[in-house]
Length: 578
Image 1 (cartoon, rainbow, N blue to C red):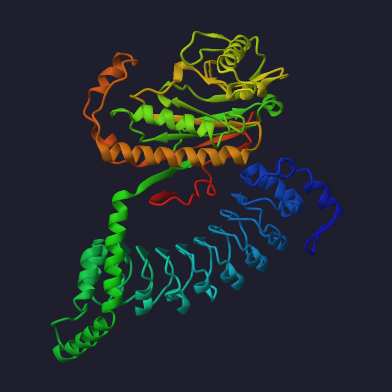
Image 2 (cartoon, rainbow, N blue to C red):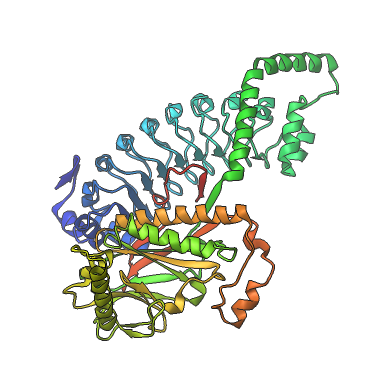
């Protein structure tokens, strides 16, 4: 029994083949797999390692194996997962990373933090698509050579290791996207003046190292906004005082003015040093002018920028949870959910624009609800935890939008009659969009539904939401769900599109400053809120997207949205902060 040359005993093979998570991912052709926690660690311990079947899941683009202290070795078979874009191997006890990782040509995120690594293979430098590298909290002494070949690298975290210096090619001007370097709590003794070559650098953390000087050339990094050199014993005590006070602007101004010793002790030597610097500055005049122009363009872009900030489940202990029952498997098995905060629907036609955009998405990328269905709710009216279930149409009851409470079987029958009447009035021979998504329920013994903690149905996909949780102008936080009978990836793609559209609409509302109005449908408390000053809710068009986990009835994770591979959209002026 072997995978890519990895020999395993028959006993080990029998044990690891019982991993339901991997079998499920293979059967459902999943592109995302998360293995973490005590249950997975126990399986690794019993099997003596990972189930080798994992290296056959070649469709995966996101793989996370974390919080498993029994995981000490990752086999060379990892090279088979050629479509991986994110490989998360944090909080294990890995002692090495196989060279095969260099074969993952599409890899964008590599996180091997909190392990027992002493080095990284040089093959890491072959990852031409890599944007994020996190190797923090290990025992690494040197970084691999050739990192300058990772030309798309934007963030590197090497904190809490034993590194004594940066490799020379980390200062390469080929790394024109590198904006963040976190290298705190190492043993770095020198920062080269070549740091000026990193023209995109915005955030530099070298706190708690062994630096004695800060090169004046650091001030030539035109986009630098945050620096941290605290915990270093600098020769220039005045500079050290500035550094410990976190005065980024003061530190950079001081370095531009000549830095340590200026005007003291050796004026001639200081003058010669300054003259040399002046000459160097003139050589860089064109570069500075270009950087200034880029900075101005960047500032202009900032004014038009849409920001989506992702709030992870771990950062929100009271996060809403959804459990999916086995009953949905044969009806409508796929669902992703999230919470969106910061949407301002009070001004002018903001709510109308949002609802119109949702209808358009239903007609287009949802293919008139036949591929997937979107449901949006006022989070304050949703009582969790939620259950995604399938129930008999004669017992399933819902208050549909704009209607009175009725059984699902009666609602579907009524909608079928309305759809047929529409067809006759328009003298159409073909079926309408309404006909098409109603047909998705034909022959189903049970209908899908999302049920709240009080056993009230708040959603009946692909038919309708509940009137109880519908959106209002006073809605500030949304619970959003996308369901499909086709695939999980379609749910994720549509949710991505919806959130991008929400960011665009929120920016439009923010820029046009329409007068806030009430929709007249809210209760007394809501109406009082509607006439309050807008306050912080309109101070920024930024949206916060809070992750929601979907688990099975035993609590095993099925999917979380947004994961690290979600919202990787190429949209101008949209920034996603993870």
